[in-house]
Length: 285
Image (cartoon, rainbow, N blue to C red; front, top):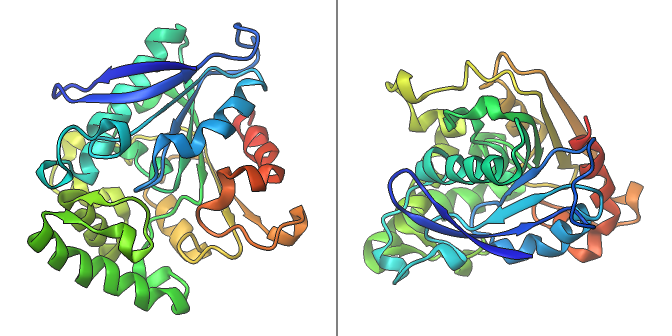
């Protein structure tokens, strides 16, 4: 496992880890994998899964977005990161680095939640052979489960914007929404979830930065039947933003894999290793 430094086009430095395929040589039949985290989830959360996936023959890069984990430089309240930059800058830089490091023509993008929702912001999206989005959706508030919608609305549209003005950052940890976030990320997250269409909101009126209608990369979404955020409605809302992409959706029932629950986050936990072959299978197409 090799610590790496990624440099974005705007000069921002990100920290990540590169894991070569087990044995030091990637299988000729497998492409490198760019593992893009969910909102407010540090790269360390994915390392055990990444080690397992490396044993399946993939080179893998996982990283922290700006303002998160090892890519937070200085105080959180001083971070000017935005959610749009996570796609337009951070994922772009990570993809470029992995291509250069491995010499591959294309890579597979395995994205957890937000990590699998922003390919339409990447000018180098054609270098992605396939997107596998785990719990990926627009998080559209109107499409969430009713029992969770009120909590999410209060957190994203009330508590976070107010707290961001007072504290200078989004206190999402106290709200049960992952690590604390830079204010710009937290506020934009709420705006995108309220509007629907997720990352399309970052490029409205900016056709030169909007690649959603150009994306032809096949997209596979896996979401659990007990996920309050990635529901059939919010998944469909995401896939409609990529009209040229061939898409498929897998609804995963926890009980079918000997699990009591999966939800939105648990896919990558060691306790949920029964799900890991599902993701590896979809990476193969």
